[in-house]
Image 1 (cartoon, rainbow, N blue to C red):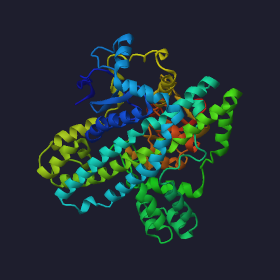
Image 2 (cartoon, rainbow, N blue to C red; image 1 turned 60 degrees about the horizontal axis):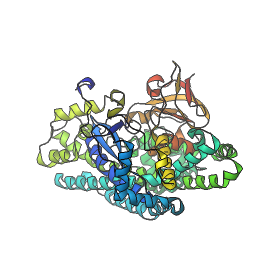
Image 3 (cartoon, rainbow, N blue to C red; image 1 turned 180 degrees about the vertical axis):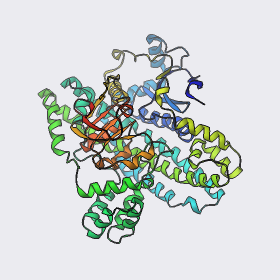
Image 4 (tube, rainbow, N blue to C red; image 1 turned 30 degrees about the horizontal axis):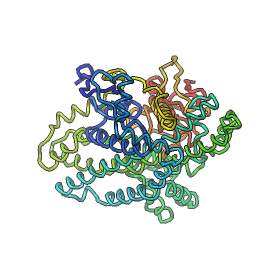
Length: 562
């Protein structure tokens, strides 16, 4: 079915905006079910703890594309648009949950509940989720009968639901202090969000849960000449990786790192995306780059200079408050960047491994034309195909796959339903609530806002996500399979990036994306590692040819073909 014959319609009232920043291509039925269920549940729980008047975002999948609608507390779902402000205000102020949140918001600045969430993440949720994933990882799908494999798929599906809920339970805490910093610092300095966020990054980059294992693997390789020779071998990458894992001197540290990261998604957010172990070339090149130390930005001097430039613009009487706000924003860095890596990326990677084993068996039985087509079945359809020998036909799954892999968000309307309306006047809100609402608005704007396209034949413009200038060869990523072509010093040109790119940043000279705002993961990760980046260009992957030499100016938010 072609793009023209598919209607884009949503029956549910609301103003529905396309989320092309996270999902520039259609998502799978498996992910669609989890996203629509667990994102609102987790976000609503997190927003209630902070006292936000925004309850959650609803998600609806239309032809595979994700549309989101904000749901304020107490706001009725009107068929033709939100009610007039006076009616909305009256209904809201009578709503018991609204009154409770107003009381909560009054004490948020003093209580700083995101600190509790950071501690909860570090001391309970992260270790508990990691242990659960290690337990599931030990269950080899290849050793299961069909019925046992179906049981494992059910277990992995329930785990994916839970981990995705946990991810978004912490979303508000992970972004609100950053939004509060932006809101105040922009008033004090007059600087753009892009300039302010240059000061809001860690000196060495976010140290994720697997950083210790990666550092240990790199150190072991640097201290073992035999292992260094194995790493430099020009044999196929998988063979090099296998030799390193078997080598007595470094095998333990390499295996420890890969046990933590090997089955996590790298190329996107969905089960159709590749895990690290499926890209041995990328793993080997990343290790080589890290061992050599070449291209690893120290970050410290650049960060200090950028941070000083911003702070110098702050009025002297506000600098103590500025420092405190910056410290709070930095305190949630790991919470913001680790959640997907530890929670849903690992859960989805484990599910992917089991689904591929089921797909292999179904293809042998003639129920699939290609293993990847099973990703276009829902969870229940997968079980029906595997155990009950019914479910969607091979032809139908092939049609779904063809659609999902051939279209992009360019064909989807940016808005469905009625036009978005501005929020109620800030003067209606108590001061504490007004501050929290503005912080939330700033974070959402920095996360999703993209400039209007302003391109020239050899120049693309976007957002100044990470400072610095770099010139090198463009590596245009159109699909997951393209990641194996990334070499040291390349300029990554992609539709979007995820937190998992932390692992390949040592390879890259610069980053350019079509989608995403200044708090997108492409922007955040590039800033953390001191790599120039331009995001939200809308069409860099179409304008910049693969292999072309490109000059990336992260200060100006431009990339020019040389």
